[in-house]
Image (tube, rainbow, N blue to C red; front, top):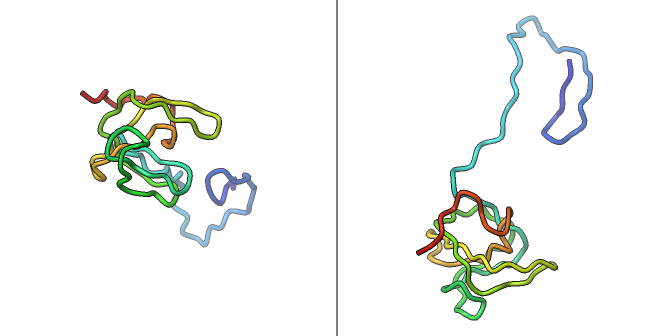
Length: 116
């Protein structure tokens, strides 16, 4: 049998463990994310009341967090880790904005509408 203990690990060859009742094999796929769902990166990342680092802070993510993005727009440029981006995303569950610099994915998120 060819197996990997978990996704991303080395594939090994092992004896088949039949036990007399082997019925088949499956590949377990990771769960799919709903449209508009992304992950943040970094630690101690703040959301803001408006798409600007100068606006009041709303919520701090202590580490990577799954968030739902309603829409995005161009606003204040932000630089972090050598990258600059002026895209900000609105997170409806937090009633706050986060710079796309802290969202995993392209600078402008695919499949997310532009905010009015």
